[in-house]
Each structure stands twice: as structure tokens, then as C-alpha cells.
Length: 73
Image (tube, rainbow, N blue to C red; front, top):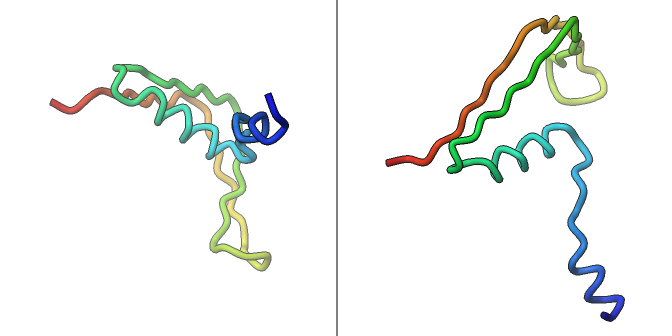
């Protein structure tokens, strides 16, 4: 296999958690799959806007988020 073909076959790794979650959701959609996230004392700093000058508000997460996918009829 040539070097060019090897580069084309490489799967691009996600660089952010949201890309990873979206890729997993897209792969499972239509397979009646469930994604379950469990959080224990997790704090997220939520920005007020996009940019370096954004203010941040802490959100606490402690519990479970379930996402279920299924095919449309």
C-alpha cells in the first residue's frame, strides 16, 4: 500500500468531547441504542458568550443523562 493510500484510510480522531459524542450518536442512531452518561460532582464553567472576554458561571452536575435513539416509522 502506498503512503498516499494509508493517509487517506486514516480515521480522523475527535479533538473535543462534543465531536466524540456526536460521532457516537450518529453511529448508534437507528439501532435502538441508548447512551447513558453518569456524573458525580462534576463542575462545568459555562461561558456567557464566545470569546476570550466571556464570563463563566459554574454548573454542578450530579446524576444521569440518558439518550435513546430509534428509527422513525
